[in-house]
Length: 227
Image (cartoon, rainbow, N blue to C red; front, side, top):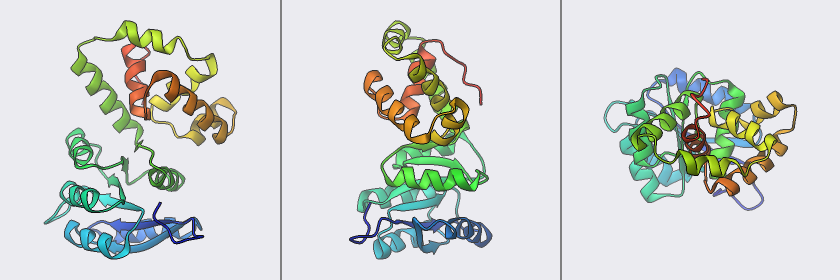
């Protein structure tokens, strides 16, 4: 994270053409001492200028805006800065999701997510994680598996065979879009323990993010995902 020396707060830029939406996000984030809102922008062009001026760690980016939209702004921001873009939308449309991912977004959430999930997503995005809503995770997993036409099932089963029973439990829940906190609550373990299991799962499966875990599970026939 590009924070001042001795300051571990995540610097966030809010981008949305609706003032009420920006105010809502600002209100949600104001109670979190580890996050600092450094600015707001009402469109993509203004967002690009604000990123250049304030150098945020994370940009909460609306997808559909007049003029320069979310994907266009994201392409420029990712190319010009170290800021990570977390797309926020009111409609979980696969076309929008793919446009934002192609542009370089690090994640994709719905605007009506619980405040705790949004805060968690911002932190994880700042640390380099890939974050998606449960619905978006399912879209990506199914699209990837359908494109393969069923190939890779044997190899996927071989890779999953290396997981412990607890790691498999964690993997199934993570692949369905659950956060570490949600997985921990379901399995009665701490979020930190979930993170440790997830690191082992990534290493054993040879993947980097939750969506790739979901793809391997789907290849192995451990689906469809329940979202």
